[in-house]
Image (cartoon, rainbow, N blue to C red):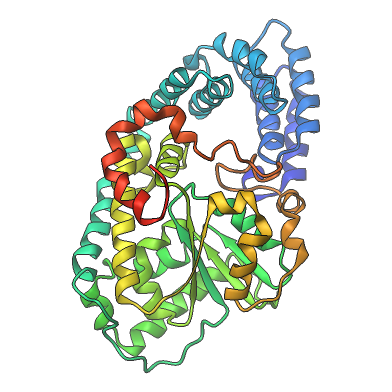
Length: 421
């Protein structure tokens, strides 16, 4: 529990006390390794793995897995592969089985064994689909909400209400897009600016949707009265206060949750002066990466358990985005992940100007910013502390045989966003 709420020192101390009481407590060693690995504390991870291997010289599945994680971080992929292939996934606790498939998939990919890698990601998603956990969520419910919104918003080509309520949102921007579009890297870069606070993947907009009680269709948003808008704003800021210290006076708050792109109509109705930062990445890379990730499940993330459903959601989301963009007078700053990893300053300078801020050279020191963040609650936590991570650019081409099935869904968006197919 302590490690999940950011109290790392207390978590480490608690686990160390458990190991003092029982030096042969494999799960405690594994948990300690997890703390260090998630925090990118690789020196501490190496010491912990060494201690665990000494405690279990005959081998133990959890300890072997943690050893493989360390070997992977050290780019010792052949030894990581050999270690992982000796482990039977069923020997691991349920919470590590999915991580096992992901790590073995990344290891095979690093060794150029792409078909073997893809099979591991398929195994990961099959394990989730066959688990009791997935029964709690409804992927189709989220997808149908996107389609319902599209049905209304596609019918208009210009704003359909007049503003009569005072704007209170001049210091708000929303970082949107599709998951795995480089938003974690951009989030980390923006945190380096002295006048920006990024609130990462918190449910402020979802709280408004819940308060509304139904999708923010065109008719619903058009008929909103001032009192309802004020009430929804209050819900947003009450939730924001749980994740942001209002005494920290900054010029701009960036609400980063990519799939808030679904609710642009509601956001713009409640915060008409807010700006939007649209993060883009090659649609094929984006969809493939979503399929490969071990996301924490909810109705939206449950769409990434098959490649076909991932591509379907991408196409539906981007179609809805185009309807919003056509209908509403949105202020949009757009940037591509591929440009960002080639030239941070050249890509971010226009964005900072769009946000009405002065350039800050600390934006370039994203690795230091990432280290200072501590826990990063996205699958990119290990990448953003490294030099610009370019291996994922064009990754889909290594899996082109597997991607052929979904290319017809993605091709219109590849063309729309100016990418090569």
